[in-house]
Length: 195
Image 1 (tube, one colour):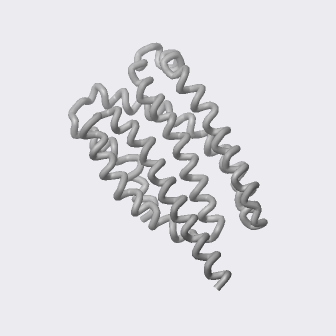
Image 2: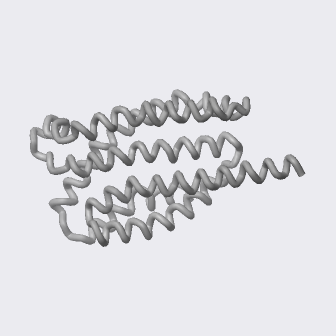
Image 3: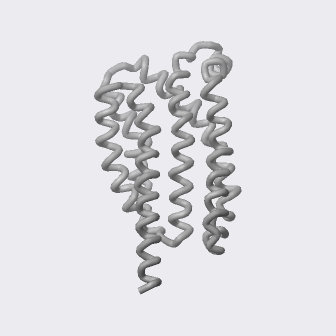
């Protein structure tokens, strides 16, 4: 069920965009999404490398070290994405023989999504590390509902660029929900420990 809900965070935008009947722009949007998606590989490699360190910092109750590890992961992920954002028209022109340079605007925005996704996944890793594994489903249900409403509004007002920014914002929403939930759970556990 949790995997199905993922669709409402990263796939529902394309279903809504299809209804606009603008296949030309839709093609550029998809190219931008695919090229920006290549840069997500950096996050996957970095997060898998440092995930055991996150769990160890949680087990050792070293919150400062945990914040440093997450900050390092997000920074290492952000750097190639930021470089790509600045050089996207050139890179896309080079990769596509200047045929799909119109996709660079979408790719630049969607590269920002790679950064907001890293915040979300880092928070979820911490939630799992603290043992709140079942809570990810609740977070995704709440997030999916909010994101559907947000995508509908963004696409209704800003069409394809609204969808691209919606991708960025959806993971900000998910991160905020996850952080609120994490703090709530930790405070609840702290209260029960002192009671």
